[in-house]
Image 1 (tube, rainbow, N blue to C red):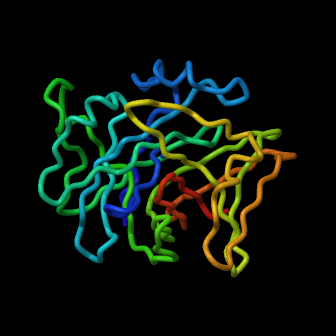
Image 2: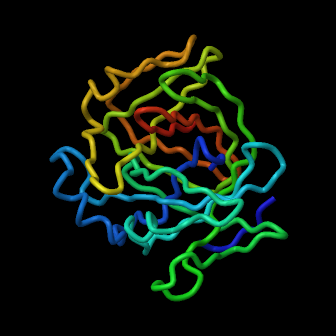
Length: 239
């Protein structure tokens, strides 16, 4: 279990968003603002994590993020043995909080990957505990993961949310979407046609709706997350 400290996954096929830049201090923001549709939030938050396998299973991994690092710096990192890069993503929720950092015996809380950034700039923020594959095919991989983190995501009333419902009736809300770190284009998440080209897994259904009241995704310990990794990248949390 992580230790709590006052304060937004795994390996290779998925990695889930941190909320490290929700105050709008990410140096990559300037590149994204011009591409942001008028209906989208102006203060966008991005993530570009480094993932370290922990060995318990093929999915178990720790996620480290650096909110002050640029995408250019992240792209230049050559992952050491046992490390991979998570996907570059933008936060879809209107805001989010990280309420604590995890810590695990035998693994560092911070790591230095970039010489020009002072100190150990990458901080441990999340752990992928395990996952199960739902679908693997020509369109990519879809996995349902158990993710250890302490976060609160907020979607404002009046915003469109995108949801996928499992055959068991569990509803997953889109909260992170993949971007090209070398050509950042933010889609209009209020567009009801955003996922017209997406085919859900067998037995799953996709829908979208406009919120009549604020929606909170409150995760004090472990979230169930759906990771879609194909031509497009998206991450969804069970509400």
